[in-house]
Length: 108
Image (tube, rainbow, N blue to C red; front, top):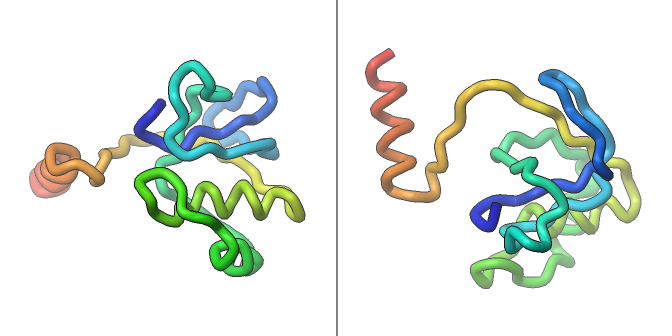
């Protein structure tokens, strides 16, 4: 979990296609403090209010502004839901993951 954004849904169990309000989202937490094993895979539908919070978000993991930190701030004013998406994903933040994604797409 320490490589991904992790969501807290207060112990709810999400089945494929379900959504529920998040209580927190944390970027790259250590495994012993992660609220769950539910990872963010980079698919977002956000309200325009996120722009306000992006401008107020301090640098986070990797000394970068993290979208997950902005979403966590957004949740102070608005409900933000997690959605259990099915399918395959690749970590394109690594060279190996990016190559695997291209290889899989290329053989289709």
